[in-house]
Image 1 (tube, rainbow, N blue to C red):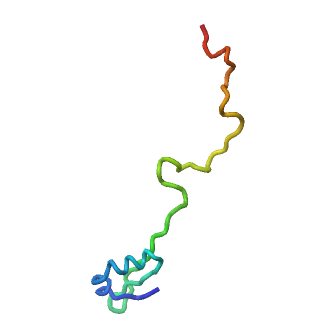
Image 2 (image 1 turned 90 degrees about the vertical axis):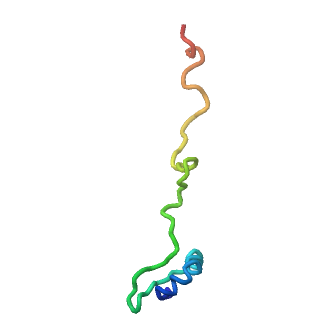
Image 3 (image 1 turned 45 degrees about the vertical axis):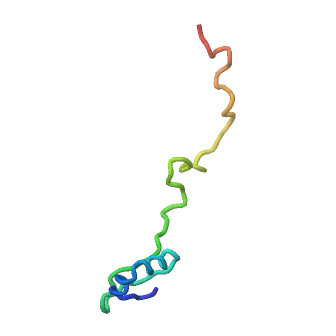
Length: 78
């Protein structure tokens, strides 16, 4: 972890954010006291958060899902 003064961070925040995006971690120092950490964001999970595909891999198919449940002669009752 690299220590940076709060004034240096204020002057060059874009530079340090880009470096953090690439995996570096910085400790922000106010005089001699550590006050914050600038670190890359970690994803919470590997699952998709989008609506389509968010449940991929969570279900199993058992049996035949294509053929009808009831026989053809019972489809239309008069």
